[in-house]
Length: 285
Image (cartoon, rainbow, N blue to C red; front, side, top):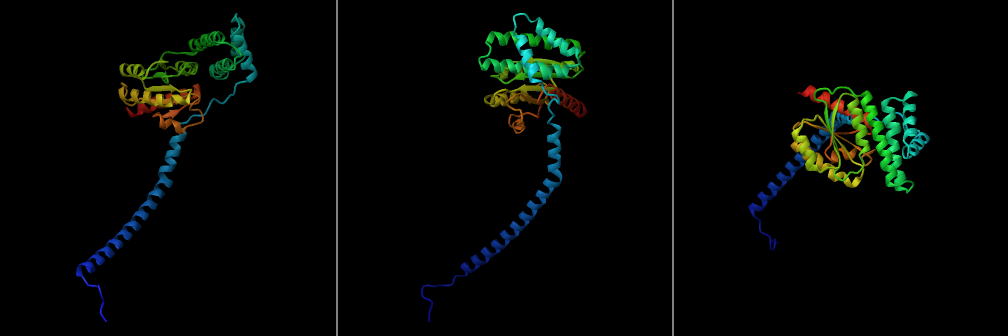
């Protein structure tokens, strides 16, 4: 009996051996790769993971520990838009004399009152003139806090505070500036300006910290562009970037997305971060 249509070829035999050898080598490589992956996974879990978690905790600061009293804020908001601002000033200084420190005045009275005015405007409970008048008076009280508590600036503690290019809410940045100035920082504000304008400031002056506020999620890409432009042109090649604002609150994953280093929930948190960055740069120098 013959094998019709079949012819033995040594080359086919050799190819089969090579294929078997290749398969064996592939299996061995897969085993080595699997072992290497397991080793890397252990390294990440045991070493890198805890370090990243620790870094994340260091670069997130807690919010101000005291909450605003809604009734107090509502009454103060009503007073600051009255034709005569005397009652609002008396209310403010009375709270100060009752023992409210600068941090509490800023974070539990001035800042929430500014937000209340904005909400009242959106709900047609007051008009633009009322809001403008109220915020102007809040700024005057804010400047009073800074004049009373501010001291001479410390060498190297210079911060550039900016808004996202389309930002229209600036009072929060001014609150942050007040906290920094009260602790010996020099601050430069660039609000409502283009990315190129802010980058030009960072190029001609030395700043250890850049602070960026973003209130609207639609401004996140704009904030990323301005941060990238400032990092590229900054006189301080190691400038640290902290961000804040309602678009970022409670969403720390956005910090890296827009190219920042850390996020602060409020003025005291921004001051804490700025000091950490300042001392970190001093140690590295």
